[in-house]
Structure formats: C-alpha cells, structure tokens
Length: 269
Image (cartoon, rainbow, N blue to C red; front, side, top):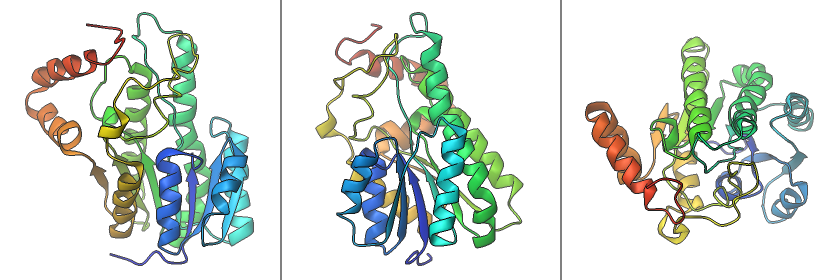
C-alpha cells in the first residue's frame, strides 16, 4: 500500500454523489485536487470545505475540447497529474423498444467518450508519474440491467477500454483500476434520462437502504492506494451477481428481471 499524500488527483463528476465523496476522501488523505463538473458553482462551494489545495474546472466531459482543457489546466496549475478518476456519468430508465436513440448517444458521449477523452489527454502525464487511471463503472458494466440498455452498454464499454489500456501499458508502470459499485445512494437516478431524454426526477429505489457514497469512496481510494486492478462493491447485488453470471447466467437473467420489475412504475413486469 502506497502513500498518496501530496499526489495530484483529477476527479470528473465531482459536484455530487460518489465524485463529491471521492473529493472529500482524497482530501482527507492529503491529496491536491482538480475537480471537474458542469456545475462550477457547486465545485467552488465544495472547494471551500476542503482542507487542501483545489483547482475547479467547469467541464462537460462529452466535449473533447473541455476534457483537453481540463488536463491542460491541471498540469499548468500543479505541474503533474498522478491520479485520474473518471467518475462523471449519467443513467437512464426506459426499455429499448420505447427509447429515443438520442438518449443512448448521450449516455455513450458522457460515460464512454468522457472517459476516453480525459484518459487520452492525461495518459502522457500519468505515464511520467507511474500514476493511476480509474473508471467508476457499475455492476451494470458486468450484468445487463433491463431498462438500462444504454447505461449498461456504456459501462461495459468503459470496462473493456480500461482493461485493454492496462494490458497495453503493463510494462510502463501505469496502474488501471476498474471500480464497480453496486446500487449507491446518489443523485444519479434522479437525473436519469427517460425514453424521451427528460430527467426522471424521482428515484424509483429506496436510497436510504443503499451503500452510501462515502463508503463507496473509501473503498475506491483504498483500491487506488493498493493499486488494485478491480473492485466490485456490495455483496448480493455486486460480488454474488457477478459470480452467478459466470456459472448460471440464465438464472441471473431471471433474478435480475424479477428484481428490477419490482421498482415502482417499472416499464416491464
């Protein structure tokens, strides 16, 4: 386990949820932070609460130019990048039969291409420092979740991208982490896109019964310190589901469908 004190950490989607919790957890470990999100006022508010040096950058990760500017600003300010956390993401809730294809494009633009853009521009700097690139995916990056076709596709894509990046750079000292939380209490379901692309508004799940964003962040930061290649969080919805998928995939299909159909106003029964 290595010390991460004084390392420079770039976190996308840092204005809320897991990203915000990660900012607090890395700050507690003495890291210097570059916080990125579309809502800069929330980043600046968070900055005032953190006891470390923080640079905030308004960033829409679906825009390549924004991602390039983010990395350039981080290097210009701190002179280096040690850790990149690709956390920015959006979700959806609609069956594929009904969904507008623009919704799926938006999911891929933010979740997949946002990770690709930021990683592309940060990679030369991470190779210099023997640093870490991490992607926050989801159990949906291992298991297809009904009603979330675009979300699952984007998270599978991120996992494939990062796993391949790890192999390409196995002799260059780059650490690649794929972190897959189970259902975590955050704003992601409130802002999830409907079939027409509007925000869902209300979460269909009992957020108070989920793993907290703070607990999730502690696990992720610990995995960065230990330079783990992957972590799967929560037992039943995470580790057990991934295990079952390897040996009894048809059983998992039935269990997943039944579980998701229990949501209020589920689009399938």
